[in-house]
Amino acid sequence: MAATTIALPPVEMPLLHEYRGRVGMLCLILAESAIFSIFVVAYLYYAGKSLSGPTPAEVLDRPYLISACLIFSSFTIFMAERAIARGKIRLFGIWWLLTIVLGAIFLVGTAHEWYGLIYKDGLTISSSLFGTTFYSLVGLHASHVIIGLTGLTITMILTAMGYVKQEHAPRIEVFGMYWHFVDAVWIVVFTVVYVIAR
Image 1 (cartoon, one colour):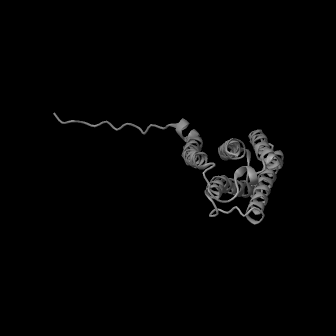
Image 2: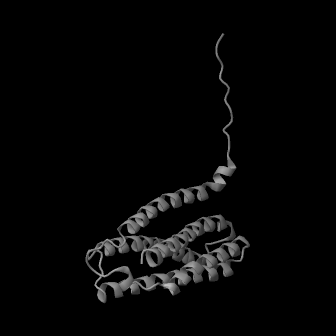
Image 3: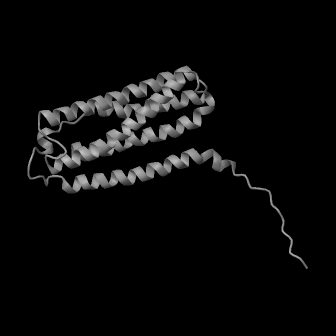
């Protein structure tokens, strides 16, 4: 008696395809969260252990205005997500552009702070342990803001050219997850650097 094989049709998993972008972004966020956690722990561990250079209390002012801009940008990107889901592309573009402006204000404010710390206070990445950990942690966050602004700007250009449509709403939502993560991380960084370890 010969064994027979039965060919089964391939199993389609439409839900898996639908959530692939979200799952991928969640995995990225988890990995990035682990990296940020290491930098935060290092900053807290070495806080107050610098033997030379200025201390955080001497040179750091709390950047309330730029922080508010970045945190408010989570609201503007959320409104952009809602607009595109409803097919209101023009409104989407306005909210998206506002998100870019708020993120850019944050970056310019960070650059201004660093300029003062370097040229006025003499705090560099190699001047002290505080300088090393400060620029590493805040710089890591700033690099994520730059990446986010790059994606936002490319999407804005595509929107202006008429390529972004309502069917792209799920992709916009996935990118929004990244931007919300960047904002949430700043709350942690702000609390650690400018409040707890100051």
